[in-house]
Length: 265
Image 1: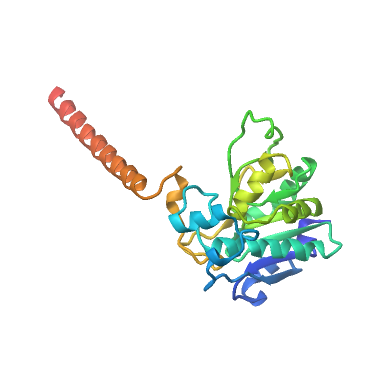
Image 2: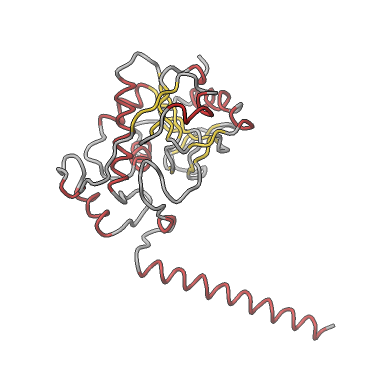
């Protein structure tokens, strides 16, 4: 069965209908909208620790340190929305499902590559097949050996906007889901890192995520600072100061070289 014939294709969205996703339906005719879990107005600190861990609550209170940290109630809602899709899929007899977030961008010049990539990922035994994750490069790590010209087995990646998930993958994801301790991509990466499941990503991104400052699922400003390790507050200021000083140094160096060149001539 071609990936485009998949009968369980879920589009996570807070307030849009299937009519808003004709670009997706063109490729996935069986697509359906799954209403995202709306956490607006919910105080995460009041949720039981069995649902959201104390570590996650602390990271919301003090600010995000790493890309895996839960940054807001929206992060919790995003994770729960994916869980909702996994459970919905497991209630069917389908061999796999496709989960898309509502800000995916499908490019005609890339979509033809999808079946070829899926075939490579299946040969690797992948439980989670990302269509556009940003992943850590080929490593000497024993958990990260398989790769070919189309697919790479990964143990650490960012973004969950477009994925194929097998029944085994969904069962494992549901089994270890609670308590929520990190963002959903960090959660899946952790399971892959410790060998609970096999995850793959394309060598070249096939389906990308729309670049915007807000997500209709997370409802939070994109935490750009998390692209740097352990960088809250003063650390971020120091980093920016260093960048500015380095820029000024390079600019002054270029001026000096230019003057010396003129003097030599």
